[in-house]
Length: 119
Image (cartoon, rainbow, N blue to C red; front, side, top):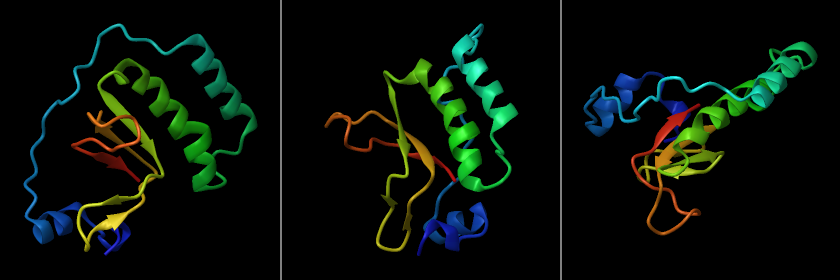
């Protein structure tokens, strides 16, 4: 069953017995400001790219640049994955647009745990 087949998070929780726990797993640094280059690129996209024309336009012109800019502060400990297939088991699998995992001890090409995905 693909991720998209589930309509609500509680459906997945019930099906797989996943308990919901809220926890701040990333320490947020105060006074972290985006780079001037990032702000200029985002403003350019806002002015000249029709970001509401499609999901792809939003992903490439807005979502990914924001994720990447935030990710820079955490890159030593976490991995940012783009369109990487993910499988929980034979039943639950899919390819989220983006997700974050811990860095694997096996290297940059291996997904660590726990995965967090955004689709």
